Length: 134
Image (cartoon, rainbow, N blue to C red):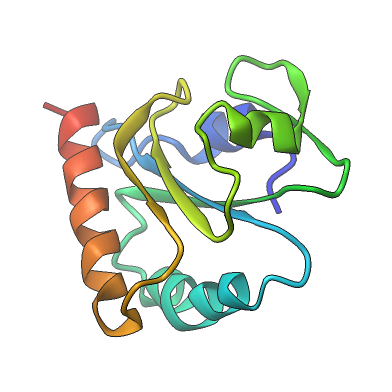
């Protein structure tokens, strides 16, 4: 769980070539079985592979718990209110953001077909990376 998005991006947001990375933010909530499924079957294997180290910052935001985070502007906000900025009220939702918190690719809400989910995540990450680094 990410508590400080600004600090996480400042620490890990640039690759070895000085290019900005895409923040892949999973919006989840307690007892969300689909959130666990995405984490275990899609996100963890992506992270473990090492293939995304130069392009992606992986983060998770848990909503509906009363928790707070520090947003990309350094402001402390309620996690659920932060997710509402992106109309991310359903879980799981994947947000693709830049270092200022702007969406760089369309969010993915829910799971349609798990077999194709990884492909759609990859496509969104590629699109976001190109948008950040034209």
